[in-house]
Structures are given as structure tokens and as C-alpha cells.
Image 1 (cartoon, rainbow, N blue to C red):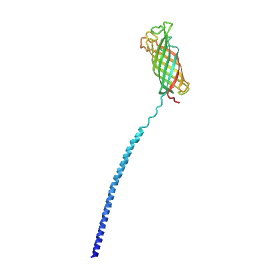
Image 2: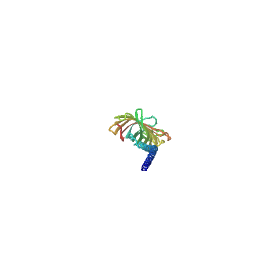
Image 3: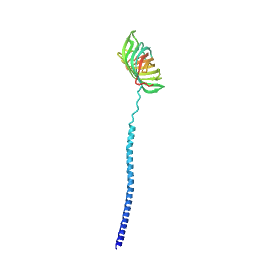
Length: 259
């Protein structure tokens, strides 16, 4: 009887062990299946995090490119000159007057603004002439012809806002140049004729040389200056004046010069 109980109990234990083994195997398979399902989702979430981090870093790189400092602008070459004009004589080119001459003292500003042309540096030019002394006949007729041997001096001033300069051999010790200027001249009384006007047009053409004296200072000599004054028939009479002259002055370079 005892033997039967022992065999029965051992049989029951073996069956319970088998049940435990079966349940453990089922649980192990379920855990593996769950891991297989969760692994792709984890990988996808990691890829999304990496992609999002890449997307957030791209604007930072573009911001770095945008914040580059702008290139440094080079200063424009410019110079200022103080000159005086001495007449050589009066000539009839576009005018009808005789015995009319003008002395001037002016300030000219030249700025390298227009590049190069004909192997020359092209500059913008503006000139202010605060002192103009006109010598003309004391008495003249409608056409500007002298009716008296005496001369009179008429003060005035002029300004030429429209001008250019061709400068060759830049940065050399001797530099030839040519200038052209257009402006207006105003006198204290009607010039050249009692029927003319106070205000006149002024046209100048110069040809000369710059001689280097130091790094910033040049001697300026214009052996040829054509100086024309007329009112362009803004009044009843327009005798005008044509003068050939010589201009001498000192030029000072502003800012940093090219070497």
C-alpha cells in the first residue's frame, strides 16, 4: 500500500514538472515575440531622433554662413587743389570782345569715381572760384566793343559742379592730365556790355602736369587753360570772352594712397 502511494506521488510530481516546463517554454516564446515586436519600434524612434537632431543642426550651419562679415571697402582716391590763374591774353574764338581778361583763385576737388578710359584714370571734378577779377573796357557798346582806352575791374565768383579729369601715369612722379569743367560765373555788374547779364556760363579746358613733391603733396602746373565766359543769349547782348591762361597750384591727396 505504501508502495502504491509513493508511485502515485512520484507520478504526480513528474506531471507537475512537465506542466512547469511547458508553461516556462510558452512564457519564453511570448517574451521573445514581444522583444521582436518592440525592437523595430525602438529603432524607428532612434532614427527619428537622429533625423530631428540633423534637421535642427542645418539652420545653425546656414546661420553661420549668413553671419559672415562683409568685405572691407577700400577708400576712394581723392585730392583737393588750391590754384591761381594768370591770363596770357584774350582771343576771339567764340566771343566778340577785346581787352577782356580774368584772374582767378579757386579750390578744386578731384575724386576717382569713373574707372579708366584711354589708359587714363577718370575722375569727377568740381571747382569753386571765390575770387574772379575781370578786367574790361570802362565803356563799351551793345556788342562789347571798347569805347574808352581805360580799363575797369569787376569782381565776381564762379562755380563748376560738372567736370572730369583724365589722369595718365598714375602713381608716377610726373603725371600728365586734362580737365574739362562746366559751370557759372556771376559778376558784381553786367559784364562785357551794358546790355549783357550779371550771370554767365563758364567753360574751362585745362592741360597740365602734376609733379610729386611728397607722398601727399603735388605741384600742379597747367600751361594751357582755355577760359570762356558768356551768357548764352540769356540777355539781349552776348559778347562773351575767350581767354588763354596759365594755372599754378598745390594739390593735396586725401585719405590713404595706393602704392
